[in-house]
Figure 1 (cartoon, rainbow, N blue to C red):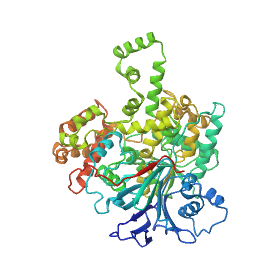
Figure 2: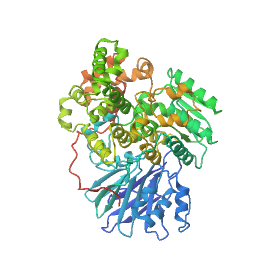
Figure 3: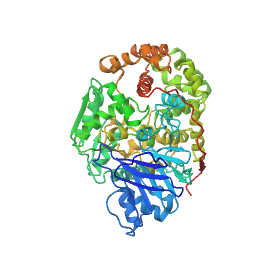
Length: 622
């Protein structure tokens, strides 16, 4: 998957050999190009129409390419198999509404020389990012942040508020990046740049119809849509499969086998010394469907893993799951470089941790008052291990849906920020609490027809967290693997929004309709296995390379040298985690990633975002 790049007004940038250069009506120098990755020797030429008045570059893949070509009805000439050619001709016929017809992970930049207009767009679910810098009439756009960071002046400062968002959520949500001068499009968003001014439009978002699918209709509709998404991602290849032994990858294997398109091989990536139960489930699944199984088990070089993630993303991003999935992906690269994965399924099908917590709260609130009193007393007097979920439900009953969701997905809470960050960092961050970002997401869910808390959280999972979850595809792309995610499909997501919110999953029933689709094909133990992120177990921190790396990284001198985190607070987190008093693995990994990023950067003070040129926003791409 190559990355796309557009530059308008950056005359000092030397374009690569395979690029289109020109000028806009104001005389600004323009460059439009595709940049190759490890998946290809060279990037494709910039696509154009017959009159050479429209040019386009697409990063990612359009899985409905054949359908789109048929819709164009032979009215245009095609010189090859580049997806950008299809976009050019669709744009000729439909204008920027054409992005609504595209299906798959994509980012695009299209220049219309007839009217001096640039169109940029990010796919409906945000599977491929689009970063941009709009600087005084100039515009730079890329699907790879690391490309824009190299442009003069765009990475001179950094935004402490974005770093806090990363520590809180494990990623920096749109429209921010950790660099104040660089923004990013939201999922399902496009931008139109004319006369030096950028206008943003939301062309797609998940909506909840008034009429929901009945329990009798839903199983067949969901299964057929899931099969359709899988078939599209089989196009042009016989891919392998990243097999974790969980429900999502097991369901993919079962659906592919039922469709008589089994994967070429299944790959399981494990950190050495972990995952015996997972390995056994994965091996059992592979044997059940007659698929060869390969286990990639090794000891990661953790400093190299962090440096690789920073190089790939261009900013602090990704968790330990990216490192573990990369093990399986690297093994898949040896066999052909295309692999399926169930990544993102729990966000699309429902039953993610926030919605399960909300379901427990709903069940608790539905009890008679005397029953709640008895349970509250039991939560105080009963064994801690047996009452943890009950206490969480009781505490959650006192929270608004937004805070209930925020506390379920955050590794740093507002009341903890003063303990973790230095006073100077707190002053730089100001009052921009990351949880405020979620308020707009919940408001959008209500506007989209969310009927209850479960619907609202489902909407937020897709629009807020799914893009970060699937970002692992970018990690594997630089290792030579094209990762295809059948369940991260916007049409499938729309179908799941059409089922009743409570039927997507309850307190213990997650991804209900995915499990129903393969209930007779997948062992019960896999159907009921709890969701576990792809990460090394707690024991990996207590010995070997990860512990040595942590001991080296979390020294007071090294933490204190950056002036961002309180050395004593980080040391306490590490002691508690090492003693297994509390699981701080996610937070410690984020601190290590941030520390490594700060050390790699040229020395510069944190910066508050400067006033940017005004942007217009309209509600739809009508």
